[in-house]
Amino acid sequence: MMTSCAVHYSLDMSLVVCYLGGEYTGIWHKPEDIIAAAVPYVSSKMLGHMQRILVQGAPANFNWEEPAENKLASLNRGNNPLVAKHPETLVKTLAKEVRNSNLMPMARWTCTCSPYAHYVPQNILVKKGKKACLIWDGTTKMNASEITMNEMASMDNEAPATFGIVYLASITWMWNMRITYPHLKILLAFIDSSSCFRFLRIFADLLRAFGFVIGPLF
Image (cartoon, rainbow, N blue to C red; front, side, top):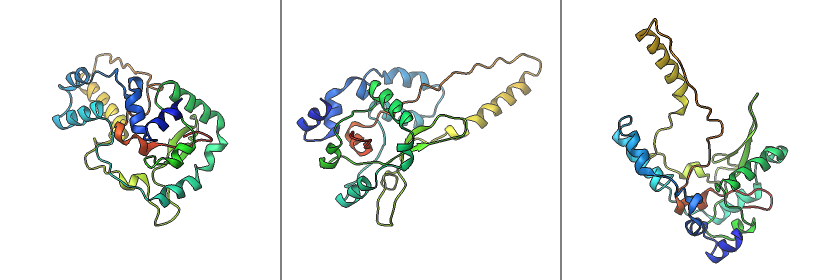
């Protein structure tokens, strides 16, 4: 049915997601409530980023007319070999994301035939002591003339990625709390966020640039 819908909209996946709406576009979000709650804690510049991300989506800027030979080279190369070596991780991830309306599965040929669809190779990230996870590869290239997603996506107007310093900021805050209150018990509460991550709601007009192929599916 998803493939039929794509055909109806001339294989423009952006129109498909706009038609589907609902969970696919995060319509349940209440941006005004989130922004209002964040006002006392973040800068006006960051509020602007939050407004854009919640109302429009991400990325902020992306304008690229991909050469056909570049897309064909990526499709011919396919995903990293590690993807085929972790079928359980692959199936579990795709099933979960489809169930949560974070992915729109359709026939593989729609990627090849669509003048709008870009293909991003996938990889499997394996860390010692942690579960393997599916990631997308926007940097790997096989020759100097090949163009990758990350080369064309501007970061100039994006919100800064600060998650790398969260641990340091947390322990610094704890240290300062102990200095301020040397004799009081300090109770720390931690939220289990292991299941909270999901695919970012992508700006509908740009989502076709983030497609990928797994087996018979795009």
